[in-house]
Length: 387
Ligand code: PMP
Ligand code: GLN
Image (cartoon, helix red, strand yellow):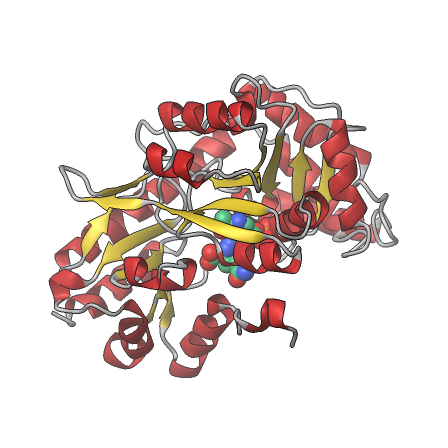
């Protein structure tokens, strides 16, 4: 293994899902739903397979039906117009979109500012692209409702003459933070002022709760032409195994990302692209029901974890809840998560893996709530026995 990748080892998600299997634990680690997406969309995939649509290489940029559906979704939902022919690119999940964007846009030595804790593939992809990651840490605040916040001065101070790109994620995995209009405006102003590119991972765009609102960074002044926005059918339609994602951006940026993408997978998921095109056209009632269902699950797990003695950062978005384990008398999330299957028959993720400043993430542990209510209830019962 080369030096660029050596520090990353095996992804925590594979490690923890294997641990869940081998110990027979409830897996609240890796984020995937235990209920598949809509039946009619599964049927659409079967139809495509049977009718021979997508069984051979689809077009490099993705099938026109899906690119048109992505553009229509963004117009309907956010009032953002993208040309399906030149400004939309279908990828093998958001994972490939992240990799291709960074490989295409970074020169060796370029600095990338990422919000810490960050989704694990960001660090590996920045490294593979020869870039340097510069983390800006989201800080926990413990006032009335505990949440993580972006310190805008820290963000500003992190920009240097070598900064090429801001890598943003909202709604944010693992903290559940949804960046506010003010925070996004400040990020946008900084990007414009310092002439930075922005890659924004918005795969949880449909999972925002209560009065939180997802605002695409590309909708802020000066951002449309400098922002690569990433979405995923895995998250929005509960088909994480299909690996259908997309990028929307100005033509020059899409062309750049596609230059990298063509040598990674070239294309992927032919028949599933047809099904996802139909999924994106589902009525608003689908998205509302999906969100309401996930919000109820959030409430169930968040209150259960609080009763079990964790400090809970109640997520405004995503399907993850971050907790602080110090009220349980624990300080080391790694040790806690490695012991948890034995102690309680539950698997969770230590947030420290998402930090360069590991000590800043040490006491935080993430639980996924995209699971059936009875599974969450059983997990809570087991965790309550810890106290
Ligand atoms: N970004 C974030 C923030 C994620 O949580 C995930 C999925 N866990 C991905 C990207 C990857 O998405 P996909 O499965 O579409 O590759
Ligand atoms: N995005 C998922 C998570 O955060 C995991 C995806 C993966 O295993 N790569 O749990």
